[in-house]
Length: 229
Ligand SMILES: C[S@@+](CC[C@H](N)C(=O)[O-])C[C@H]1O[C@@H](n2cnc3c(N)ncnc32)[C@H](O)[C@@H]1O
Image (cartoon, rainbow, N blue to C red; front, side):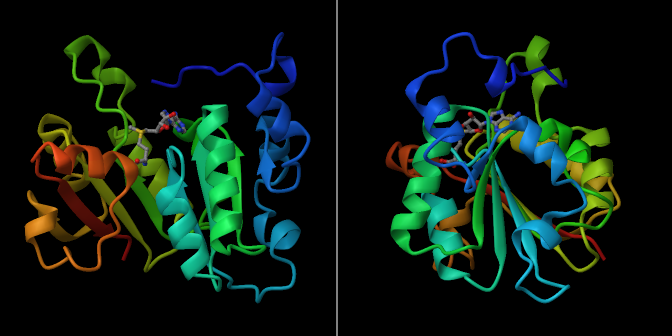
């Protein structure tokens, strides 16, 4: 379900992190209005010194940004745009990435990730990371889950052929829900595991903040990766 967010510029009492977004982090973290102006122009406006085919990856729901910082600082030859709706983790993610050594390749977006079609043109983005999205466990809230048939259809049109989506969660019912939808989408399944940390990817996988919490409780992590052929 596409819940509406209050725009940052319309907040009656912006918290200190919302103020930082508009002030200190202007140019590195973008509010909703700025995000919309960049649709179809991300390469031209942000990555103008890069080749025309410069890859732009997307992370949905960065939280406080451990993966965002790791990925952007270890892949300086790729852009990374992080989506987050909460101001504090959004600023933490941007700050962490800069401290880790990200350069002009990493940016944070205050935008509702359900509305990706308002942010990107057809085939504007490359790989997409979705790590531990809110599982919305109660049946009456399933409509709030990010992974829906329509969302996957839209996502597929926005991605370049040859790029992938990586999805992981600690919540088995949500994983089953997502798996069903990915399998009936036009994406091609590449890898599925119901225990990421006892799979062939265990060594290369980067543990996110939420992942560490669930691992510490002894819970398995569910993982899938699909390609747009
Ligand atoms: C459970 S946390 C996971 C954070 C991080 N990926 C990790 O694995 O540690 C989910 C994050 O997604 C963000 N989020 C929820 N709905 C969102 C939306 N519609 N658009 C962008 N971010 C969203 C939340 O604010 C939260 O920080």
